[in-house]
Image (cartoon, rainbow, N blue to C red; front, top):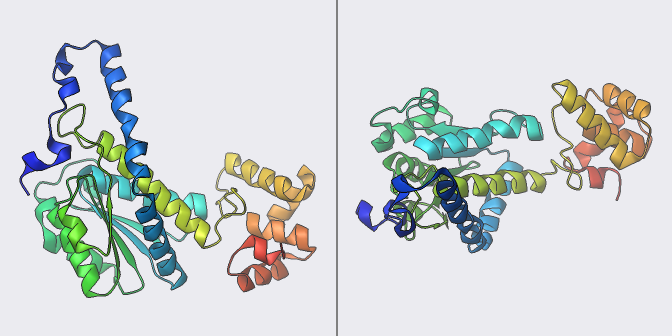
Length: 297
């Protein structure tokens, strides 16, 4: 597909005088354009839900989630993957972000990396991709060779494949079992897909990871009960979550958290089921990690 045919590459008729606008006019124009992003996402919510279900299937089979992209798209994938560890207490291997050119491409452009389809195959091979895993290929243009190469390799192994792009009839959509096309139209700064396109990708990735983690028991209600309390703020948050769920006083909650080895889940089950930490862990294991089932609600 020619670049000029892509919605992300079109000239935005509302900002052709961008260099003559005041600061207020520029940010107002950007704000108005950004409001189109959630509307575009709303139109594909059923497909996003389907993608979530595919990822949950992978997790329940012992598989992993891989985000694959170049440039801004790759950086957003790396960011979402990194945030799963502290938020949901996941092993770093469970959700991984791969960016064309490697980790140095997070801050410095690696010339030619995104045009190398073989590079993605090598990156996924090095991580022992298998049929239990799911790969989400991210490309605003929908035509990045690195992403296409990775999706094709994943399909060869019967792994799950999801394509996230910002153009209709994107090329990467034809290389995945589930296609997510979030079309927000031309950017305020023509072709700068770190703007609306990047925002839409960030929102969709938030949905994919968060909803998938809910689907495997990483939350209780809307509380992140698998959070890793690695600093004072998070220890305080963990303690308050225990109080919120169980109704005990601060000292009791803090003591339970300590006895539970800093696991909010275990502490909640200990208190509500009147058991010790060992028995609470057994209850959680039998319930597949779901607190609500572990305490018999």
